[in-house]
Image 1 (tube, one colour):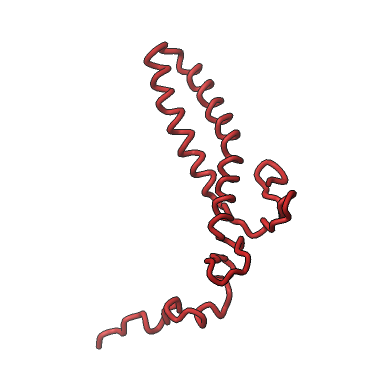
Image 2: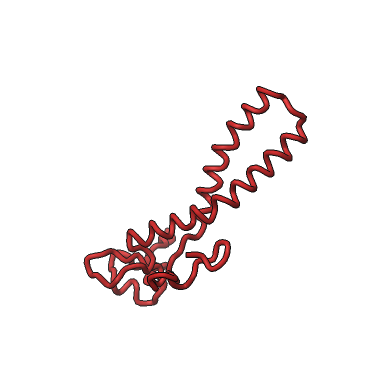
Length: 134
């Protein structure tokens, strides 16, 4: 699925599925930090309570462990998020089925978006400002 460490290939190498429209953005990084901190935090307390190592030993060891764990988990979490998006037909993964939702962000960046959705029309700036009192 990946062309490099975190860059998703434009298409699947085995089936040819278009992967260019996926948008994982900051989700994988957020989940990686969340998981790593919940694993390393309690372990830090256990190590300190059991052996009471020197502070620099703990800083060096746990920084290295957190970095290594983050580098190992980040591509797997990103792959899982892209797979989840593909399974839910989000961000351009739809196959043209009219019954399947297709949440393509490019739809919201067009000028005629408010013409398709009357509820999503931007509020007129002059109508939104209150008139001054006499």
